[in-house]
Length: 274
Image (cartoon, rainbow, N blue to C red; front, top):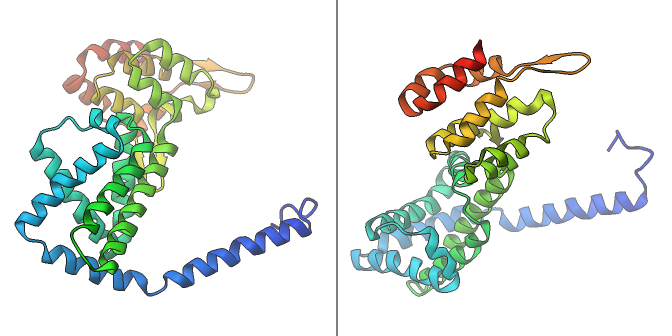
């Protein structure tokens, strides 16, 4: 605020005060609730019989597909895999209360993986709604239901934020595996920042390498274009730009990685180092 004294006026002061008054009110309303919700949710989970767990596993996805039919295109795994996902969801809801800091980091890392899979974020809301509706049919304890819904909603919001922040135009181009799309995406970046765009996407404390993601996902056309772009010498009036140092600083084992996972990319890398 002290940096904008000329622009700051009474309207800004009112808006600033309104914002923090609402933050204070919401925090006060939540104080003490997480401990109560954690115990209620733990009681619910421990009380579930094997039949109840299987019912929850089945109904979560059935309700989700009913609310968002297009979501079936992104859940083509076996029933065993879907049951495993449902189990992880239940586990994450209780762990969010027990170890929130660790869970935020884990969820952020998971969200960055979803960036590469191009999962539409609009599916998260109906998934949370469907799961909460299923839990509502399984308990009369409103505290447990609220605890489950609050935790799963928080998890989904973290995932959505991570995906939105991590969905750079470079990552979107990688999903197409088209060299032209990758070159167009990176062309808008300044010379001095091209290497960062190709080698690192960070959200919070978590990061992912677009180059390595391209290799892992089989988008070798884009991976080749990225290596060529990194090892192209550019300049302006003051500096030369060459991404070799950035590449080997971020991935010192890149040659071994290409030998193991993407040998066709080695010529592009070695040619760029000459």
